[in-house]
Length: 194
Image (cartoon, rainbow, N blue to C red; front, side, top):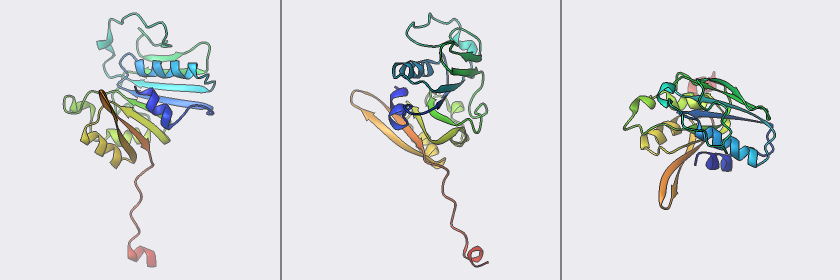
């Protein structure tokens, strides 16, 4: 679910590099599905991925890894990983957002896999949306299952163009594209004549 809307809005084809950020990494299924899709599409560029998971201890024990998914981090403690046959690497950090988000990471695709803000408000602190914008490249695409009004509003305030995507018979989801920072206010008349 996360990969297709991101790839539709910001295709990887023709790019030399793609950066993926997954917040609420869990076992990294969204990143693994993205890598599998990129491999199927023949993407030959560099991939750099970063996953933030604040509770890696809750993932133990790990189930058997699905054979079709490239997931070298599977069953291992947080840390760096690399695919041996491709220029694809990344890191899983035991951190929460927004604190663990690296400003300037330049993410092209952001998979925001957090529980609902009503049930888990601690995951949706007010600084999250601006921190995601600072960790993103211009034109980055963010996808999430969470369609709550507060999430849509905070993303929009931080410079994201938010689209609620409705699907018949399936759960709605959001896709947001980083439009850039909000415009600066016009100069005051006194500043304009000075």
